Length: 162
Image 1 (tube, rainbow, N blue to C red):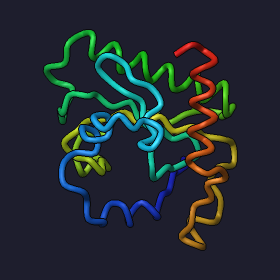
Image 2: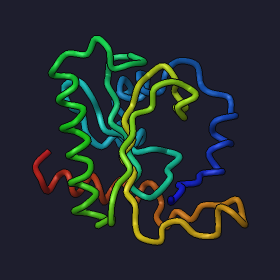
Image 3: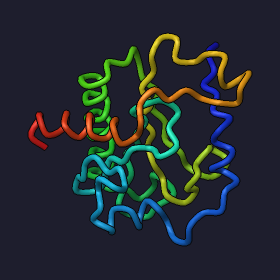
Image 4: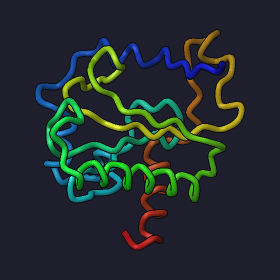
């Protein structure tokens, strides 16, 4: 069994959080590049994770502030999966990972840094992407700056006409 360790995340988990909900506040600001928002759909948006497990780690997030899947319309459920598929296709085209981890965070104990706003993680994985650094040095090697990854992914979307 392979584990995806992220010991550096504890700094984020224990840090003081801004007032409000980042998943509500960020899309309302209309500063997509600064906020790492890659795509806006009707019900959801795709945003890069500012504390990534791997390069290209992004999330599909509903605009509506909701903690669970209950009460969602068929259109909301469908778009979440369509955007997850779009994210996988974009990462496949631009970064060529060997596989993916996809997971929905619901609640604080599920690992959600934003416990009351559901979101779906799309994490690209490469053979050998876990190594000794997190274990011995409490550090994770992220090989590309977030802004460079954002530009690469955004350009990939524009090529597709979105």
